[in-house]
Image (cartoon, rainbow, N blue to C red; front, top):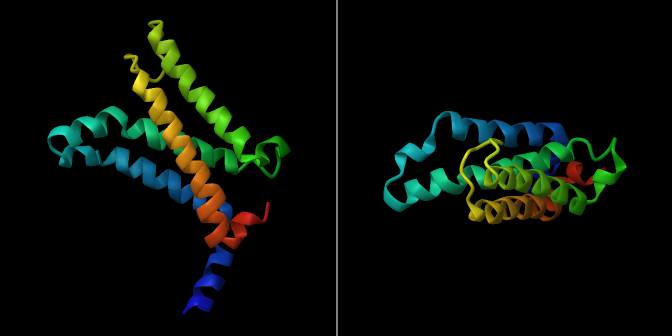
Length: 137
């Protein structure tokens, strides 16, 4: 069974993994899964869930380009770019500029950092270990 799983994971191309991540993120938003939550979970979901998963997805979109753009091969560069772009939108909101939202919340910046660090962990630890095709960059 383990040998069969190893062969299967070798066949999974990087693009398919990234597309699957993006589709899951889109479906969670499209089907508004937060409406099934109550109380504090509802509030937390609608306040911070997107702040975590959108930078997570942005990080993996950059992973598609790290072969053709050598500077993106380093996870720290991808993480910094995504965190800077996400934080810039929040800082613009603090100055009254509509940028993917209208209300400034400093905790959003912390959520961006959590999303980026979670993506970097999945990229560098989980995918590199369990998806051999991911490590061939």
